[in-house]
Length: 49
Length: 227
Image 1 (cartoon, helix red, strand yellow):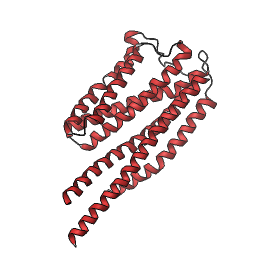
Image 2 (image 1 turned 135 degrees about the horizontal axis):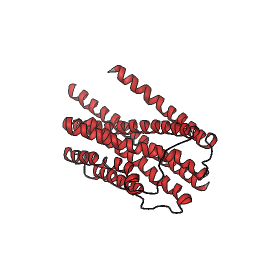
Image 3 (image 1 turned 90 degrees about the vertical axis):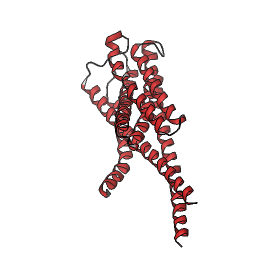
Image 4 (image 1 turned 90 degrees about the horizontal axis):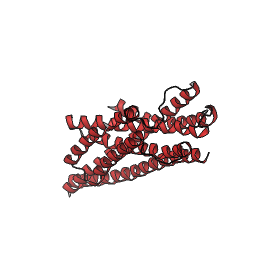
């Protein structure tokens, strides 16, 4: 039983940690994209006015 | 284009839930439905996550090879990003195979690891794609690196048929699946379905984050050029 428990725990932990790391990275990247888009729009607005 | 986006959004909101349901169904079948194997007892239940992990690793590496070939042929950036994401996922699932394998081997064979042909070839596969992932992480994101990585991704996949024929070629001790009771076959099928859901979900997430990386790079260049 301990081996079975260890094997299933390993599978769940590895998949969970990988999913968590991707979603965190994605949130950070989405925030950065938003910031950069805003900066680009501000630059464009300043130039046009 | 709008239809594609809507469809993609639907898949992205539906897929995590489908994955959760499929994983719960797989766990229920492994622990509540399928009977104990006669010789090995309850530890044999590791098989239902071990084998689908191996299949997902192979699927990941086949996607790497296919996308790499498409990248070399057509030079499409999206194919390169797909190869990169699939290599990472293949590594995750190949690591699961190499972690759950010893946990199954210890109570059955009495050792954590043995240099059996199939085990050794699987370790070689892991090392090949570890080299691929390290190349992508540390050698920079240039066209030349992408081309070298694509060649490695295509050559590395040759190891997969070798893993399959290694049992016949060198007569190892790793068991091969020949006949299965219907309950076992159904449980394996549900577990494989659950792993396909996990794989698809994570691959889509990873590909999207790589596309976001590209978008950030383009926006940065735009901001720098404008200032």
